[in-house]
Image 1 (cartoon, helix red, strand yellow):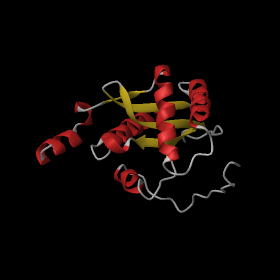
Image 2 (cartoon, one colour):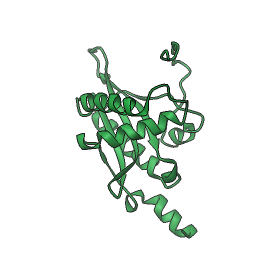
Image 3 (cartoon, helix red, strand yellow):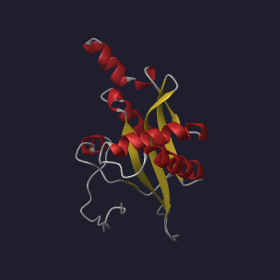
Length: 171
């Protein structure tokens, strides 16, 4: 690909793939993406087939339940990326403050599809949807590698955020 063609492709990811909301038919591929994503970060402790069955069941139950939403990047019928949002209800307030947050998680693009603007386009779609829904805030836990992408989309670190991490799941 020439430099000009690469720039054109990066500025128009839809020329290469389709960004859309996930549907129930996507669950098997979404589970595969989840396995690819997490097993590359740490050694799996669960059999791949067992994990895929468990993950598919989890996704079938939650996808489109009003709280969980997922956007996918599809290229030639194959999912090459996804990003999930969970709507987190806030306690009602008598002010004009919005009563929902959006938790962004499981943002992943296959290694072979990275560097083409697909993740950025998915992020744009998620943030447009979140703004239209009028959530109070979108929050996430970035990695060192993903921090720059989030910052390009307006995210800022907030020194007020605190967390308490418990031990990972027992083997």
